[in-house]
Amino acid sequence: MPDLVFAVDDLAGSATRALVAHHLAGMHASSPAESVFALDVDGLRHPDVTFFAATLGDEVVAIGALKQLDPQNGELKSMRVADAYLGTGAGRAMLRHLVAEARTRGMKTLWLETGSTEDFVPARRLYEAEGFVECGPFADYRENPFSVFMTLSVVE
Image 1 (spheres, rainbow, N blue to C red):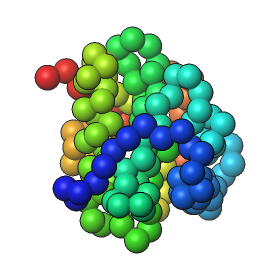
Image 2 (image 1 turned 60 degrees about the vertical axis):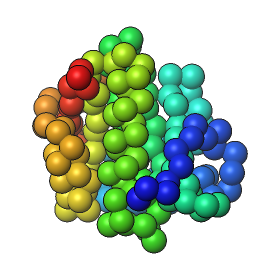
Image 3 (image 1 turned 90 degrees about the vertical axis):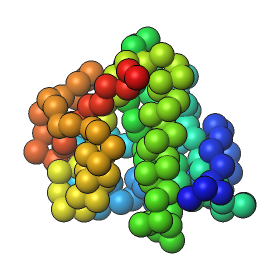
Image 4 (image 1 turned 90 degrees about the horizontal axis):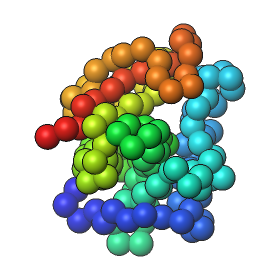
């Protein structure tokens, strides 16, 4: 999607907040509450998190966040594509934007947690296609039957 514009978003806009809410609702529909690690608006405003929106004109197409775990490691958070844009490449574009941002910041490794159920197969396939590999839990995560952990070296 060459016309997408990526920018840091302050989560004040109603379209952005609606997509975050839609993301959270989807996570809760697919996993038990204790296995949902997606951040709400307040969590996405934490100083260690940079939240991005991808827009096409005035429409919010995709969201994603980069959490700084330490100077060399980051975590991808709250990636979601608006339903009308599923399958268009917007998710891949957001993922590539976040990986590029991590490189710009000098990070060496990115991590993510995603779901293990069928609902998450498209996300896992996207991550694998972009070089992420399954790994064990990282940071404060613990083994969980509803979680898949993945990592990517972002050193060029």
